[in-house]
Length: 174
Ligand SMILES: [Zn+2]
Ligand SMILES: [Zn+2]
Image (cartoon, rainbow, N blue to C red; front, side):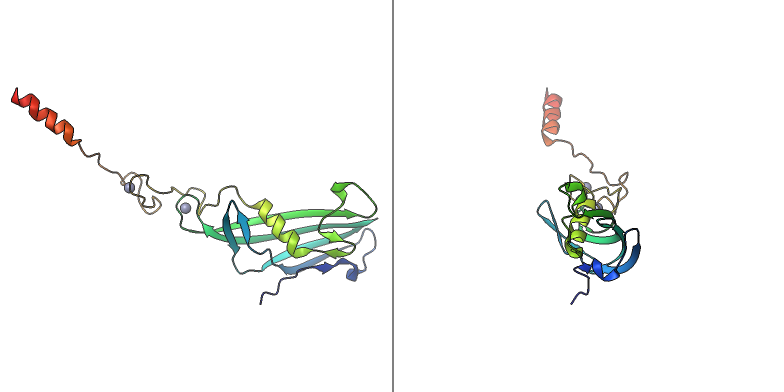
């Protein structure tokens, strides 16, 4: 069973306004569903750094981690391991209607870490998941991966059209 933190009780640090606490803990972002494709996190849990600050009327929290996302490369379909860097901040201020200051992940003193890690990772995902930034993709003719081949050498000789050969024969007959 994975041992990632699902939530953190921020009140247990007994921080006063202006005080902060740095935490190292494991988060569990879960699987991602992007454009109908499923992506899993390598190792299920990811070591994260959490900075918690007590503000006058609430909390400011920063979460940082690097998750290795497994999935098929969108160009060559090979297995890709893409490091995705997450650096997310949330502010939660008591007694305000301002959405910018009301975090959906903080309820009273409870930080919903799993939910936040999942959403933050989804936001940080690249638009194209590639096995490497310069992936050359698949040959449009034979479907072979061009990463394994020298593109200068991977060529398909254009076969002469047999109909042209026939035409040539006709001309010779005249
Ligand atoms: Zn690729
Ligand atoms: Zn080819």
